[in-house]
Image (cartoon, rainbow, N blue to C red):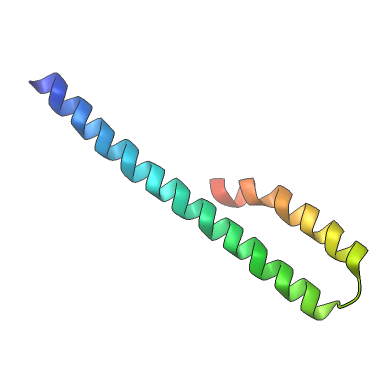
Length: 67
């Protein structure tokens, strides 16, 4: 019985963690999208610059997710 309770509790904790990770992932991606909109708005017509910034921002998303 105790082992079953521990497994159930672990499942709940894992589920909550998965929700937090998903939520943080969404937050990081939303931040990246909003940041890119600002870059494009401030630097219209600079497609090469937009691409370079987007590549850097995309590489930072995993860092934002972890911290």
